[in-house]
Image (tube, rainbow, N blue to C red; front, side, top):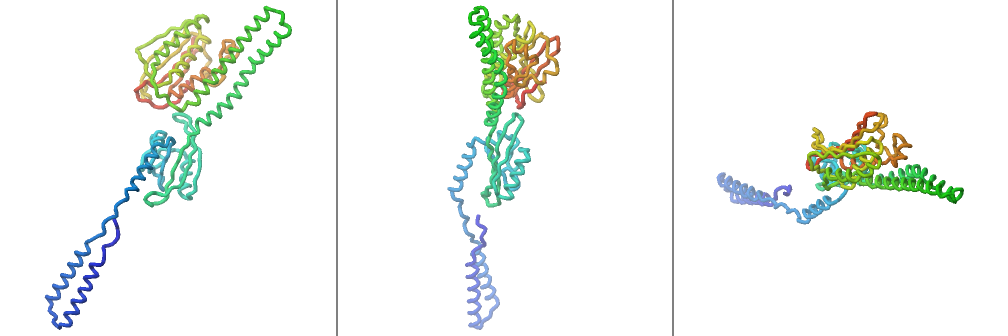
Length: 420
């Protein structure tokens, strides 16, 4: 609606009429008070009635509303988080990607309620005061470790009330992890591959030289070379698997799998190799099914690694079980347990078991074909599945490894995998 004052032509005409009326009375020399009062009253009423007219409000152009709707639609389909705040750092607008990243983000509330990063908040204040764009880094650790580049720019408010700030968050997690994996691969793989390569080169030189005509030595050396080649193959396979898992660790799986069916498949597959090593595997299936949100291949690899570790380093009896538990904070959980009656693990080693290439006994692990990456793969897979890993062991009695995953359909709280 227009705020312009009332139009003045009605009152101008009324003033002219008063002047003409007064002149006519003066010329006629007849100053009759009732007539004068009646004439003045009529003139005032006419001026007041004419002054009631206001200009009609200008209609809002349809093009402006249409452009606003198009802008909102474009913002909603931007895959990266975008946030708009006013000069008081109150949230004006945010797209769905921003709300998914920051659940505490709400309109008309301070940005600091949802984003507790001093660097980003200081950058917003600097942009609002200077109008110059800024670029800062943002790192989050819950529910997963992620890295963002936050671009902050000044933007005039649509209603002309001042300057606002727009935050554009670009996810650099995959790029940073890829670079870290490249560095780790060069450092770790070169160290782990050096020993089997040196062994292969030494036996090849021996077969080409002193053992050229010795059939028994040739057969023995070729078997050792085969074992070392298989060790390198397992190492490369585990490194590639770990790299793929870490690359997608921040992306939660969306499919639903039956953990009980996967466990039974892995127990059946690991049964014959366990018998060769003199061990037996018993599967204790409870009240199934056990639906969990997850990637079937990754969860199968988790179960396979846990069973293989129990068979290699445990005793003669391995037990695999499934159960449900209720957690007051995490809701309904599915628990997979793998236990053995082996020599156990000293308590000082347990906190480091999920580190890459960490072994309690290096020589024994290599002799059994271990790469030192099995539990690292388990940990990163569970991070992606919002799971938890706990290891309980008593020297001389055995080890129990438990994997806890959120049950499909239950209230889930994102949480990193950890070990106790």
